[in-house]
Image (tube, rainbow, N blue to C red):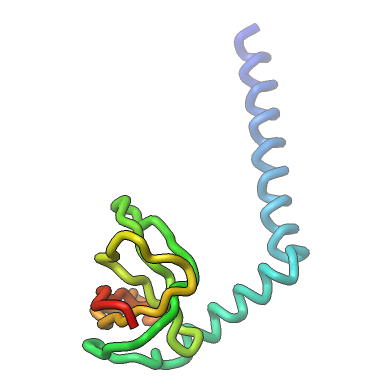
Length: 121
């Protein structure tokens, strides 16, 4: 009896896994145009040089806020479409505020940077 139950459970798990794989492939092949466009923009960003260098000071507008994996709040900004995450934010900043930041580092693929808040722009 235990053997039959194990076989049924195994078949059920395989069917679920197969359905998951088919869903992933279909989602990739037939996904939304927004997802494809986002992927293409990401691929293009990987090919170009960042428009900033380490130590550069830039004036940028806050586009949104995000929470870093450490729990710290970061501002998301852009320089010529290049994403810059800003740390050490003061209280009271809002989306649309113009701030001055200093570029500290790049991510591994140089597709985004981390910067430190220096003041209001």
